[in-house]
Image (tube, rainbow, N blue to C red; front, side, top):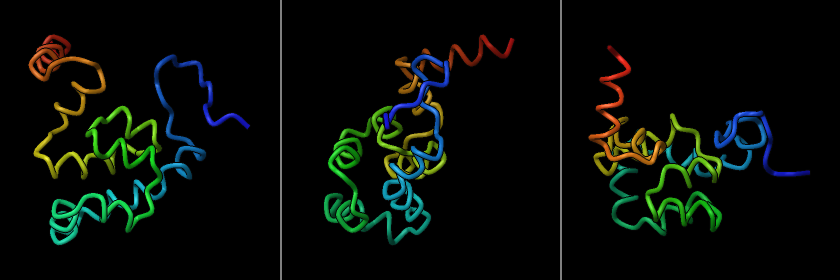
Length: 116
């Protein structure tokens, strides 16, 4: 069985049941960041924290790179990944800019233009 599903939306990963299973450990770790103590533990030793949640090599590399697209490809759900991004002071516009390959300023300008 292929690990990639074709939903007819080129370049758009779909968070389906398969991806939920693939990203379970990653999303569980990101959910843990609701706790300030857990955020501090992650910052103190990222690798140990990732091992605590049994992240696989792909997920650990994506965490280390801080690349949202890699995190999504590794099974991350954007709602849980927002908790991860928040640890580093990234907001929704930072994440949107990464997803579109734009700078944050260009992304903000695009949003302003779309709202007119």
